[in-house]
Image 1 (cartoon, rainbow, N blue to C red):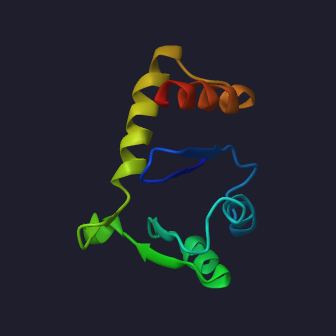
Image 2: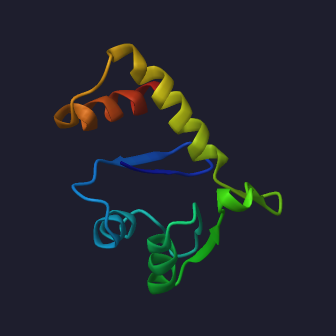
Length: 112
């Protein structure tokens, strides 16, 4: 899964066929504005995407216990969303991969 969330609570989520630079970049390109600041974990494909698209990028690497850069750059917004998603999805005793996109859509509805 790839989950993108902005400060206003807008969510985009994708069930990826494979975890690769091409798949992630293909999903990010249409939804990330050129004037955005992309805050991500340490995965290298985000860095490559930001550089190719000329988008400001802040990497937060949890191994370095780096959760916030300054006061404004963090990934806690998406981490909190994922935590709520996991807590909610437990009640279904597992979700079939074929239906995962439906559950994500259902969750997005609850979040709004």
